[in-house]
Amino acid sequence: MSVKTKSHERTLILVKPDAIQRGLSGEILTRFERKGLKIVAMKMVWPTTEQAEQHYWWSEEEKMNTGNRTLEIYKAKGLEMSRTPIEQAEYIQEKLAKFLVVGPVIAMVIEGAHAIEHVRKVVGHGSPLQADVGTIRADFTIDSYLIADEGDRAARNLVHASSSVGEAERELKVWFTEEEVFDYDLAIDQILYSKDWETQK
Image (cartoon, rainbow, N blue to C red; front, side):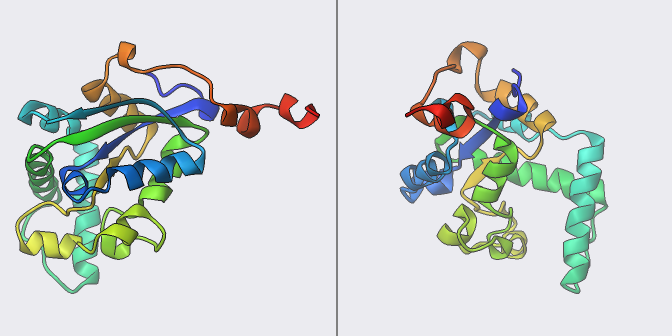
């Protein structure tokens, strides 16, 4: 499944089980629509273990990057990490997948100009403690990576959002078929993108 063009880029959102249980799905959905992003597919799913593992599949390079980022966070806090970067990444993968299957999620395909970057800004940093005020994670939860690690669990950060075009293309295929994603026009499309709208009287 393609992410389309830059002006109609597509990305994946998962409203995670913690957000569903807290009744935040409507508020989360509203944040994206108010931004001017379009929902082109949406469904509630109780993920299987296989789906969760496919969703959190990472290449060796991605594992190294994730593990090294975690190592840097630990060093900044004056803590030691006993695992290698790859081991740490695989530990994170296991915890993320385990959390995703505890209850239903809402999967959405969001479309719009620079959708991946805009959605990441709306969602905020992966660790709610480091997220900017005004983002979903900063406004609605108080968890952190360090607290999650102490509890031997995934950070409960409400939402997943694809971080790159490549990741979006891979993740979209885990949750949606081409037939489940719709092309349609909204009035706001003219306001946001059309040159002709400026000449209307």
